[in-house]
Structures are given as C-alpha cells and as structure tokens.
Amino acid sequence: MTVAVTLLTTALVIVIGLLTAAGAAKLARLDGATYPAALTRAATAFAAVITLTAAVAGALAALFA
Image (tube, rainbow, N blue to C red; front, side, top):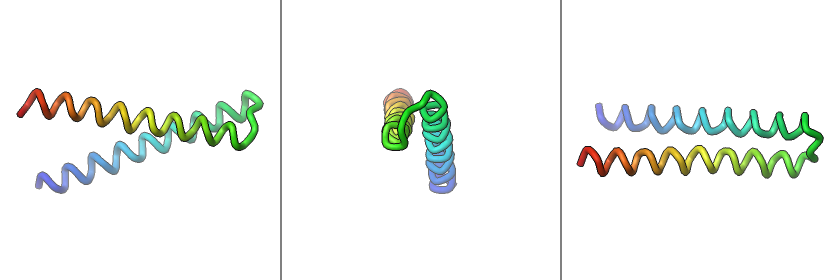
C-alpha cells in the first residue's frame, strides 16, 4: 500500500511539474521569447516545482519521523 501511494504521489508531482513548465513556456512565447528562451524558462519552472516538493517532503519526513 505504501509503495502504491508513493508511486502515485510521485506521478502526480511530475504531472504538476510538467503542467507548470508548459504554462511557463506558453507565457514566455506569448511574451515574445524565442523557443530556446521559452524552453529554458520551462525547465526552470519544472526544476523549481521538483525542488519545492523535495523540500516539503523532507520537512514532513523529519516532522513525522
């Protein structure tokens, strides 16, 4: 059960990260950025979501351990 919850949570975080990255890329393109610049902004947004999730998970793990 714990493995299933962990895998589903990981999948959800990745989907949210990808949606955030797609939104950032779309907003960058609407702002007039080139494709490489938009891709860089998308990668930065994706990395920020993953980093924030890891920080929150680490804090919760320390809190509940």
